[in-house]
Length: 146
Image (tube, rainbow, N blue to C red; front, top):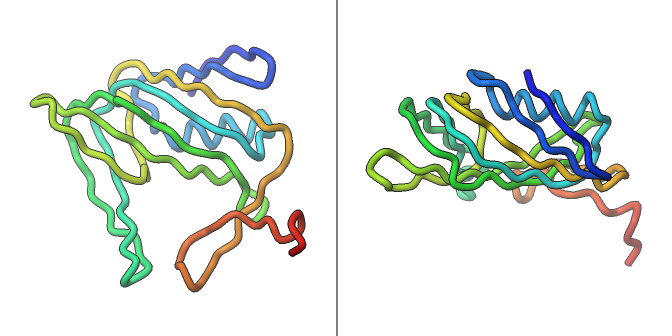
């Protein structure tokens, strides 16, 4: 699914062609026991599902694209939700006509190279569902007593 090289608390991860990026990154973080950190990356994809959060309905609206695209930027963070790896990723991709698509990344399938850097913060950061927002947010209650 991927190969990697570790340098201190950072990993350079090359995901195999035709793999789904989010699935591979979740698997990598699980294997390395990474419970907080950041991810960045570039590459090429041919299938993309973006999510847009609608604050009125408190629901995500998904849209899928099937075409060759370049990842101009993938950025996000790593935490846990209910004890499992939780990735919050955003992506900007370039299309053949040089226009761009951007949003919350639900899924993307590689069609070419996929190069990512994962930084491990070395401790757990948890999330909890906030019903007022309709989102999973950081849970710092145990750390911050105000």
